[in-house]
Image: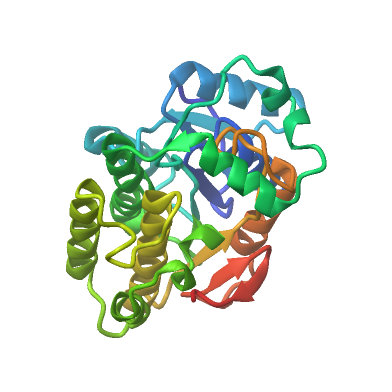
Length: 309
């Protein structure tokens, strides 16, 4: 489903992946509220269309839905073709679509979880501990985590790069996490390599991720120095951070940054967290709307520049 919107030539165009709920939906809302035409993408046609209707109900009419499954090459190509034919450019890409890389084992009808009541009185550490105890890390979930959180982001970015380069101020915001910081790695050699963006290559990142999966399947995550607890999510986000820096060096005319929104109450966190989706999204939108000529290749935590390590 694609709405009919007439855009003046100077209108900024944004794409948000995973835009039908949580942080993604709020990013769409905030960008649209800044007079930006937003292409809200989601895997599910109905959920995506319903999300656009919600935004239109509050007066945000310059929002279009387009289906996107970030792990499907044909779906990515259809989005790229649509954007090229409709707008001929893309000004802002927010790569938000992600999965947890684990399987949750809590009771799905536990009302205390869906309402957030279970987490009343817990601090962030206690909530994360609960999430760890309520999930299991399987081979399939780990593979899905890398395919969505790293390769999905990379493949969408690659397909839309020509459109971003056609913009006078193209920018990419990769929604990251403090779980992707290199301090969580216990392998010093690997940590240094992932931080050496002058020499790191995409091919080497592929090798690192393949090695992680091999070690994961062999039960050697801890002994090989990989991050523990939500391992696949942490490794994928660290790789995405590294890829963002490679991209920033390769395309200095673009603004390519990572943004950690904070510990946000969403489906991915099983409604645990310290921030609302609106608050988390504001930390992403702030990076998307940085002044022209602003920083690139930077990690932002809660809207402020921070270290990748």
